[in-house]
Length: 169
Figure (cartoon, rainbow, N blue to C red):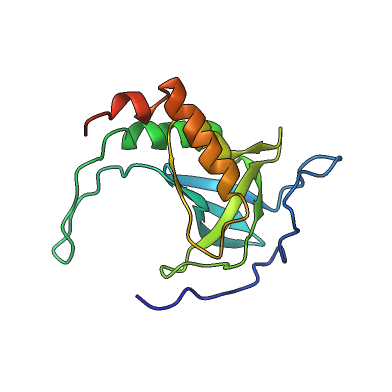
């Protein structure tokens, strides 16, 4: 695969460190669809964009195959992770997307930290803390690596989500 393409998304450069301002989270996108546990489709500045949540990896959901590409079965806790993300971010939810260093992946998806605007829930963290995602750090996008790793360790310690359901798989 080629190198990740850097870009500046329409909402600008990230602030360092990423924090929620005292006046709350100002939305810059709206959820249009939850693809799976760690990927959502949003409307941002009048454009449809696919967003891959940075710093986490959720189990895959089943995908039907095509003549060009074989399908795959769902991984342990994949459907549950997708449902949890759908519950956190129903269609129409205003969100704040924040970038890190690299703005897009090899598939053209925006890479972002996602905050639910209504209550400032940090979605990437919440998925890890509730046991729906494992940490996945790909440098240089590592602004919240330690926070997400700590969240996943707590989920594992608590036997939350995939840490209980998928042991031995």
